[in-house]
View 1 (spheres, rainbow, N blue to C red):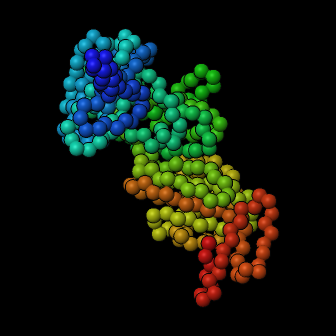
View 2 (view 1 turned 135 degrees about the horizontal axis):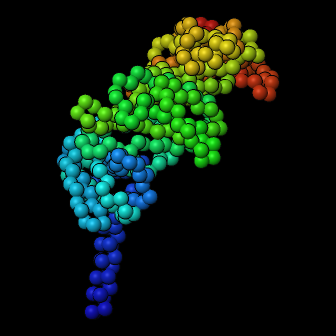
Length: 366
């Protein structure tokens, strides 16, 4: 009987330890916060150190109601923060820089599961270009010493991409531009200062540095940059693209040098899409400055036949504040299917569109 009670007690303690086990959180990670008390640990080590700048933890929550965050270092120094914003990252100055496990206790006294995004700016962040362009970073004001910049290591770029940024009116601390970047050649990186235009070449890796801002009261903060346009070079065929609320316009460039006619089908949230044809020289200047684009319009969700008057076709899509899928289909041949007895022979490598005619009104279905 005593043995049975001991076994039950051991089982109970095992379950208790498992249930109360801390969960590890990684840098630049979003996690779910369930109702109740949630406990996490973060392995802090090898921070980047710069004179006159400090390391910070940043936390952003999906909701700002009935939430509390406790940060505990291994010296048992406790900092309690009542969450009062869901639009900005809150800041925690890391004064204890020795390697250690930091504990984060999040008390969610609300009915629903929420999310928390965590960033440690003392470590470089690895991610792909798409996630970087989707990233937004607005922080509270920092009254202490300015924060270290955020540094991103961009994975090998899978497609050529040109990014034009909007005007930026904030004062940059310790720099001239918000964004600095370099092409990584081994471990060598010489940052170039350019907040208005970045060019990403397929097959290359990049490093991007995000500098903080300073206001008239000597307080520091990060402010999300806007993107006025992105330009992608794409091939023939059909492709879906997910729009981004940070991006105003997107341009897609297709090489049509070897075609007399091109057939397009574009599906967007807008009634029209816009297009133009560019020469080789016009295309080079256009990608860097958005010049030489004489807008013509085509109807969304309709098949459009275009005569290829120059080397490149450029299609412009307006993005929306709410993300949605854009379909762009470009074909070099079209076949109208009228009966079951009809057959077609399509050459290898040709992107062709087959349509079926409606007998009643003579229009085609894709």
